[in-house]
Amino acid sequence: ASWTNHSPPSHNAKKIRRRRKMLTTHDPTKIAALNDAARKSFSGCRVYMTPGVQALYQTQAIAARVQAYDDFTERNDPYGERDFGSFEFCGETIFWKIEYFDLDFQMHSLDPSDPNITARVLTIMLGHEH
Image 1 (tube, rainbow, N blue to C red):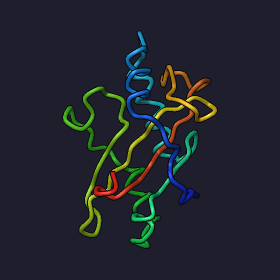
Image 2 (image 1 turned 90 degrees about the vertical axis):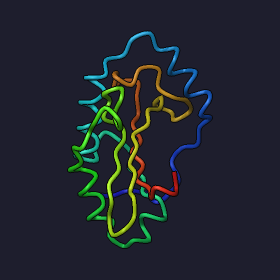
Image 3 (image 1 turned 180 degrees about the vertical axis):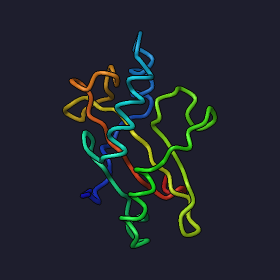
C-alpha cells in the first residue's frame, strides 16, 4: 500500500455541512459499501496518514488495522455510512475518517453514493490530531 504524508484537502466545515444538508436523497447502504471497499483495499480513494501516525513507525500495522476494522456501532456510525472508526494502538488512540469530495477536490460531493462524481479521502490520524 502507498500513501502520502501530505495533509488532506482543506475545506470549510460549514460549507460542507451546508452542502450535505442540500442532499435530498442518498443511499447509506451504497455509501457504506463504497466506503468498505475503499477502506479494505485502499483503492478508489486517497489515503493520508498524518505525521503523528507516521512517527509511530508502524504504518503497515496501523494500515492493516484500519483495513480490518469492523467495530461499527450506532454510537460511532449513526448514519450507517461506515465512514469513521477508532482503535487503540501502542497506547495511542487512532482515528480514521472517510470524507467525500467532488472529483476536483474543490468542495464536498453532492452525492457520496455516486462514485462517478465522488472522490473519497481516507485520513488516518492520532486522536489528538483530529
